[in-house]
Length: 282
Figure 1: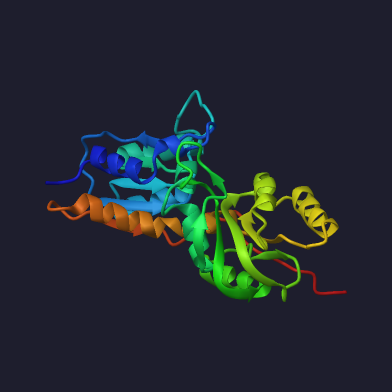
Figure 2 (figure 1 turned 180 degrees about the vertical axis):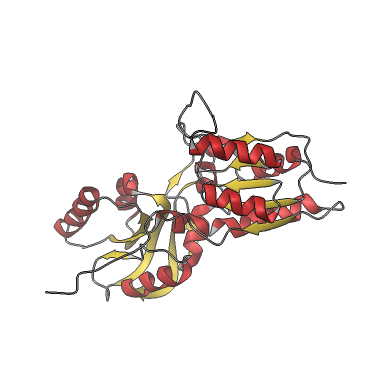
């Protein structure tokens, strides 16, 4: 038997339960007919024109993404806009689109756990537990098997995340020993209170804005600990790692005794920045 889109959606909903999403989020099936066969599944962080084109060139029947294409309500998907053009391209090619966003952030084997794995974080638990299931939730807190310098953690992130122009920004002395960390894939400066309550040595996330980050560092210094130190990485790169696990789970659960379902993870991240230039004169 050949897996259908309905089968793929059922598996995705099991892996990343929609109930785990934030109230403002939009997840699930965006376009596609449930009865259509699914033999090839592409995965990417963002549903950009380039990522969609790459998925279609590969022959995907389904594209699974992290960031929603239609997060805010729209009144038209005319092909005169780039989002409308994406929808038209997918439908004409017979390729479905499915989004797993904050539900994939909170789920077991999701975004946060993949990011924790990049730096070797163990004994993880949610930073912000779900009210319905405290074993799941946003972010992860954990400990390293052995203390490592803050600079070493930054190096692990720089080497373990996909190539991007952002790099790793560090707030704290590179030689400072670190044992416990909190990680949040994507924008995480709204969770500083939870990070402080967790009492960790360092916090890994993306999109740290000037004022929240500066105030977090000032508060840490005022308290006399200097912690948590901050490590700021590329938004898309911080969320890319979960795709490999999702691809493997989809292939295993949908292939079964029927036709094999093959998957492809887009190796690129949709980083809008194309260059990073530092000052050379003093």
